[in-house]
Image 1: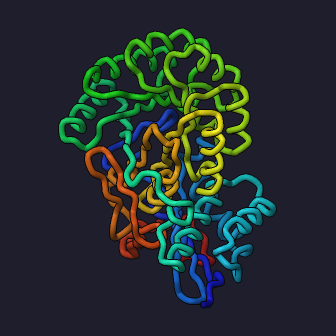
Image 2: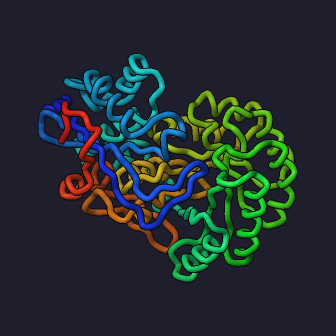
Length: 380
């Protein structure tokens, strides 16, 4: 069987979302993706998807990802055997520093095509499922406290989602904390919420408000401080109030080891893009498990392509007990595959088909293809 990599193609698409989404630094109405196809000599094709919350998050964007993939990673992959994934990941790291989102996009496509070679779902290649469906936390990000409370109540009553998180960071930290408490109290007895300030709070505010947040029933506090403030995070953990979740501060296996050593997190938020792929994500989860920490499945708000890759990995992790937030597909106004992921009563179902278990919809790619700012070499 001819399994060597013959070609890699990429395209940037811009997909509308159902309602504006408020991050700590901006509000968005569309979501951009770089979608790649890795084609083998035998005609099999693996698909991968790269996306970020924005270049403010870690310095990468869909534009930088496409450039790195086309100019630097693609030459390393042509005529290589995709089944040697760990060797290829090491090759990436030797030739390209950082750029984990770009590397994760290619790794995703490699796992997809290898799954198709063996007619096996990606989760089997990663060790097999620990759970077949994962609880999903929906992000409330209307930008308004009353709007968030109303949205959560409607989703609970319609049995779509049971638990939630809210974005913070748009306002001053004190106002953020007051808003979070208002939402938590508004959902008291109905649901739970976590808070994600995306590293925008200062230590003094977080320390002062931890007890109030705990009394209001806040479920977790995700990356409240700068990703570099390990000492501050350790202080919040030591208070033993609201559990502290690490996100931006746990991108690498070295980050994970330091967080464990400094007791600076209660929960790890895992994201395959920020860590350079599924393989690295499983290694980080193992470090958490060794320290008795639990994990949460984070998101970069992917379509069914990236979300499928994420939940294939999450489903194999025994200490992923805090659920996930892989709600990208229902959050988008449209999807990029013919068979979007299935969601049922607050859970996402892990696909069982070969590879990622989702099929690219070429008509959607053409519909949402970006007309400008795209490379000319290898675009499909």
